[in-house]
Amino acid sequence: MIKRHLPLSIFLIAGILLTSCVASKKFTEISKLGIKKNFWLLGSWNQNKSNTVEEWKFINKNLITGRMYSAVKGDTIIAETYKLERKGKEVFFTMKSTESTIPQVEMKLKSETPGVLIFENPQQEFPRTISIKLDGTSKTTLFEGINKDGEGVTRDFYFTKSEPAVKK
Image 1 (cartoon, rainbow, N blue to C red):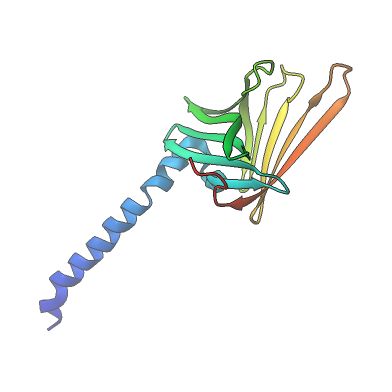
Image 2: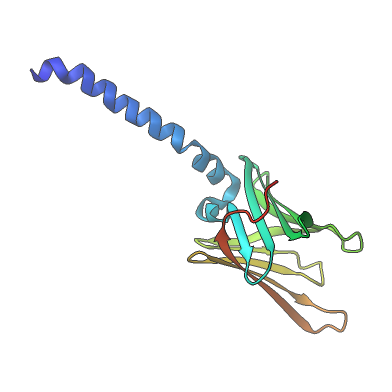
């Protein structure tokens, strides 16, 4: 009787393994990006006490894109766009404001630990460092640098994991 069910058992095990491999393909591709410990960034985040949403989407093994937007009188107003991109063996964070007076910011991934990404560009005044930290279902983005007078400046933004507030 065991010999009779052996081919069926092998078929079922092979099916489970194949399904598992397909389901983990996206995670594997994210791992190749260089943020394997930090795939938590993907999804939608509501900025506390506002209509501002930050969304991050997996594009391919080398690119994750994001945007920050607000709902104003039924319209979606995009404030910033983001890219988290692997170039060779390094990972870069690029941020562009929709305000034409603010230049594009590009920073290199300095360190990553589970729940923390730290990007740095010491050539810039502000921000020189951007830290993105996870705490449960909350995310803090901290901008650090110096102002025109050479004084240290920090700005932090708090988000909670959510569903998109505005449909595309």
